[in-house]
Length: 139
Image (cartoon, rainbow, N blue to C red; front, top):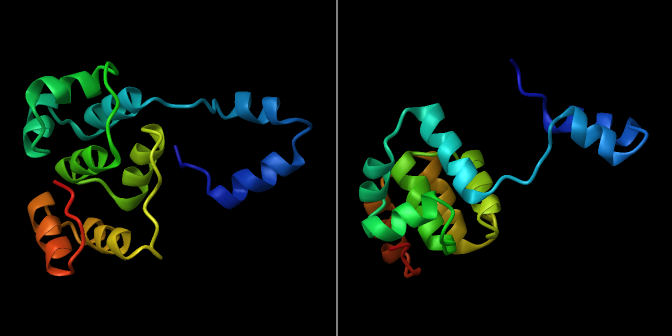
């Protein structure tokens, strides 16, 4: 099923009699970090243990994030995004689910991270690029 474009949804929202009917029709709910992580695992066929390891997270802490028992800093969420090989859109949704700021291309550090995500860099390669530009690394 084709996902509607944001512009199409915006037009439909503006034409709706009230926001509740629009939200119900499109099943819009606030997705938690653990729910979105589970969705991504299912969608991409990943194993949680592999992602936690690739993200360089402590096993216990990583599992607590996935189970919704612990929150995660913006950098920890980015570690998970790189470990899963997420697209920019998916990474931004993951950050949003965690209650963190999305990546912003006018911020130098975020711009480097966006570039690295888009070009399929690993977490290690991304940290190397951030270090090379004098920016704080993710790990």
